[in-house]
Structures are given as C-alpha cells and as structure tokens.
Image 1 (cartoon, helix red, strand yellow):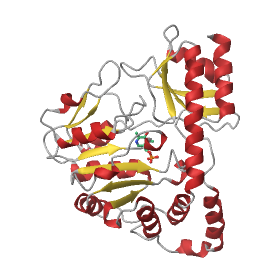
Image 2 (cartoon, rainbow, N blue to C red):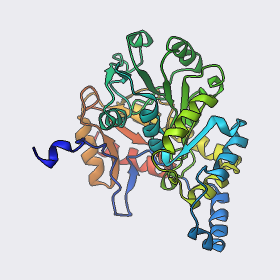
Image 3 (tube, rainbow, N blue to C red):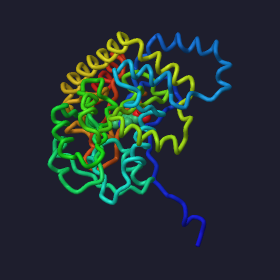
Image 4 (cartoon, rainbow, N blue to C red):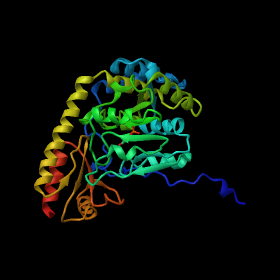
Length: 351
Ligand SMILES: *Cc1c(COP(=O)(O)O)cnc(C)c1O
C-alpha cells in the first residue's frame, strides 16, 4: 500500500499556449481581437475609487452580475447561474447532473475538456463519432445514456445545428440532463435559451470569454429551468461559495450594458471570418462552415503541422490538435483584419 494508491490521477486538459512575447499574432485560443466594451473601462476606474471594498468578500450570489444578466436576457434570476468561466459552470454541471451508471454521451470531436471532467469525477462516458463531414448524427444518440453534452456551434469544427434540430434532439432525451454549450453562439449560431421553459432537463451555457472580449475576467453562465438551476446552485454552494471575484462581477455587468459595441464587434469578427475563409479557399484550403470566431481548415497537399510550424516561424500562432481524424486540420482564431491579412500573406509565401 502506498499513499499514491489513493491519488485521483488524471491527465489534465491542456489549454492553448499563452506566449510571453508581445510581437506575435495570436490565433490559437479563440480570444476576441477587440478590446472589451468602453463601459468596462469606466467601471474599472470606479472600482479603483472603491478599492477599499476589496477587503470584503464578494457577493456570493453574484448579485450585480446576475441582476444585469437577468435584465439582459429577460429571465428571472432563479433561471440563471454564474461561474468562473463556462469551464467552471460546465464542471459544476458535470458534478451535479451526471451521477448515474449509464455513460454520458458527447461527440468524439468536440471540446476536449468534457472527457477530462468525466475522468476526474469518475463519470462513465462514451464518445459518439461525428460523421465524415464532422456533423452530428442525431440517431446515434438513441442509446442508453446518463446525459448528453453538445457544443453548439461545435468546437473545433465550428459547425452549428439549428435551434429546430436541437429541439427535435432534446425531445428524444427528456429523461436525462442535456447540456448545450453555446460558447460561440453569438458568432452566428442559434441559441437554445428560449427552450429552457419547455424542457426542464435542458441546461444552456455561455461565456463572456469570446464574444465579449473578457476571457481574462473568467465569467460564464448557465440558463435553465428553476429546478435545474436550483440543483446546480446547491452543488456549487457545497464546493466553494465565493468563486467569482468582485472586479469580475462589476466589470462583467458593465459589459452587458454596452450592447451596441457588442453587436458591432461581433459583426466585425464575422465579416473578417468570411473574408479569411475566401482567401484560404483561394490558397486551396478546405473548411467547414464555421459559425464561430475561428476557422477549421485543412490543406489537401500540405500537412497541417508543417503549415503551423511555418506560420510560427513568422510569429503567427494557430492551434493544431494531435488527435485522430483532425490531425490534418488547423483551428485558426479570427483576429483583426490586419492580422488575418498578414497571415494570408505569409501563407502565400509557401503555399
Ligand atoms: C472556450 C470554451 C469554453 C470555456 O470558456 P470559458 O473561458 O471557461 O468561459 C467552453 N466551451 C467551449 C466549447 C469553448 O470553446
């Protein structure tokens, strides 16, 4: 017997790197290239004045933020949950809702944190292969299961299912919790939030990290029936009450008040995405139909890893997953127009 026999051993999730050098074009972690809303800066200055408040614990129920979310989404607070990024929200949801013996299902190619949470919490799971076009085949999920997680739009494929398709899917799985991870929905997907009153077992998660340019603050949220949110809060408050810090609560709510800026920047990213897609097509790349702030691209004649390394030599960082089926693809986050023009220019030099 060794103390190590009792260790919960896991292979952790590996986030994309955050290089220390400044002069790079960073297109590897789907951050937003634009600064957060100007209202956030104003709130930051007000925070400075009230800096003495940092002595105190934050509001455990995330009042300021939940009130702002409640107003923005026109939902009662009992249908909202907030956490330290949607990673925290999803991790709490895995802990709260998946305790059965049947496997939790999610696609073989999707956000690579799902299997890590399942492993760390000892939740049985099974991955369901996407088809050859990286699409979800709904019928493949008609097997005994203890819950389902779907990223919509999916990552790293960028492909979205319509709300109609999602509703059809949810109606077939009323007896388990269905989590829909909408981290990228603002870039062209259709949200399932309007379905939460109809399906008590549905939990929709979103984040401020991508569309609101606030990855550094770590703000994520979930929407659901009063019942499902109650269960989620009960688990969360049994683990750690004070997860969200005061600055995040204040700055996050400020970001919600600047809707015009938000819409403008989201449209800018979408426009740049479509421009980049056309340029990459001209260079021979094939791509999925992305509804996100990244492109999932493969070149029929050149290895993805080779392209990634060549870009890297020129200070441009994109993401490559050494995983079956997708190891010849690159996930390229959408930056500013100038950044994407530079990437296309560099690609032209060797393709
Ligand atoms: C980025 C991402 C998340 C997590 O985002 P947070 O920064 O933790 O809010 C969750 N799901 C998917 C699919 C993502 O791409």
